[in-house]
Length: 353
Image (cartoon, rainbow, N blue to C red):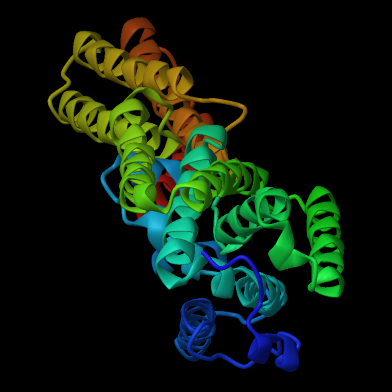
């Protein structure tokens, strides 16, 4: 690592134009921009993207990662929640890169961004059960963290960059404060990236004092990146998975409904309909078991619709049993009311995603 600016760098006053010692971070930033425009041309709203579109493009979300889509821990770093989100992250990333890449070199700063990004998204995976996480901020905060340490271990380099350091400090404060007023900001990714950056900054301090250990240090950071990735694979299996729970409830519903329908078709006495009621009750119990007030509202509504659908069917079967048992007047209007509700819910439960 270089300890101070070369004369030609001082002359340029760290302009933002990429060069031989500043090209990797601009390349990453350009990829971020190109992917955003690709998403926009594909029909994604540039100001307020639909969450489903973000998910389809590779956002980080615990349920999908648990189901095997581990690549989301990486792809989420290149997906943004609108043009403002993109501009802020790319601008800060570019400024940080312009200060740090000439000091660290492209290999070290590339490892820093990869390590920080994976660590940040891994922390987000464990922290948020349902949040859809996107953005390059995990990499940005990793650079912030490393910069904080390097200010002390590479002070000779930064003494000529006081205005730039002040700008970075202001950007850090603004981005952090903004995050506290935005419910969609992934604070876990920020914290994970920051801690990874601090650790990497300390590691680069050891490289400074002993250049001969540069390769082992890089190998250790690469191994830690792998551990962050594997922690999701190994420990993630024991975490809640709301999408999988919802699919489980739907599968149970389909099986119990098929058995209950069979009982209805072959019912000649109240015993057959009573068997049908047991199947509907089993579906009700499953729907209630997996309802979690903390799960995303659309999933919770679906779970509640399934429960209501099963209860209406159970009541419909009970009306037939009451008629067969007592030879009384069949309550046809009530039956039709239940049937209408069932038909509506059946569309919601089975036809809509």
